[in-house]
Length: 268
Ligand code: NDP
Image (cartoon, rainbow, N blue to C red; front, side, top):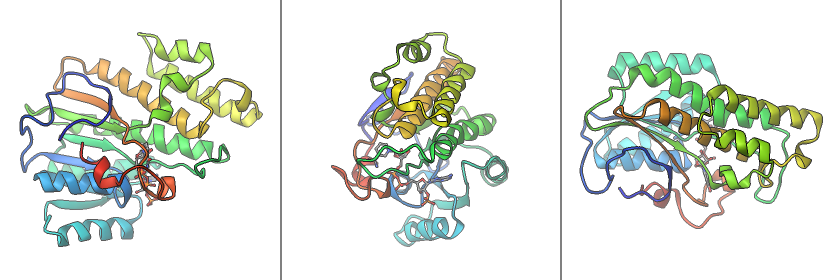
């Protein structure tokens, strides 16, 4: 496994040189019934980890897990998980605790965008923020007590996007807030609320937010910022937190467009 694009990396050992995982290493991947999440589950399972494929739709998730088991990967397990629903997160966390007693790797992959490639509507901004930012955050916070902080180093990988890079923000105050070394989780949520308010006011286009897929970009901007804050919180511990941009990948989100397949994106 070699890193394709890691935006933040804190004390992770090189992924390619040493085999730091084993069959007892438990990896959870969200939104994994298709696309990059599915490819990541497959890759982890091929490498010999125990993988929990999660999906918001039971039928689609079961089918996806079954298809991998049929391909000779018995170490793939399915559990329902809708990251936008706190009750679903709670149920999942209990299930994981009872079934595996903990986890080593969490991949926050589930996300939505409602725009065609060349569109920029913010009609579904609340859902986008709720799923892509708050979903990943709430799941992470709920799973933190279950991390084993194993010697092989527990990891959280947040699947993000270049669209959420700081250089996409044109408002200097927002940029300064997010770049502040002492950035807090509350401040990130304030920025997100500011954006949702500007959507409600109809002023979002003139306020220096990212210009492409604005709601999605803000959700990833917030996810990146949260990852930084979290990484700082766990600095010096055995938990590493990284963001990864898979690049322009051929999935439902891009309506099949892209420069490479999900399997290629998952060749971390
Ligand atoms: P897909 O649309 O193919 O897959 C998204 C997955 O997320 C689906 O399984 C979907 O489930 C799931 N999902 C959506 N909402 C929820 C929810 N509330 N709870 C649980 N699961 C949910 O997209 P990609 O594979 O392309 O995206 C994967 C990740 O990669 C995302 O984080 C995306 O932002 C990121 N990314 C993608 C790029 C690309 O070019 N494709 C570029 C940069 C980043 P369902 O099938 O039920 O809708």
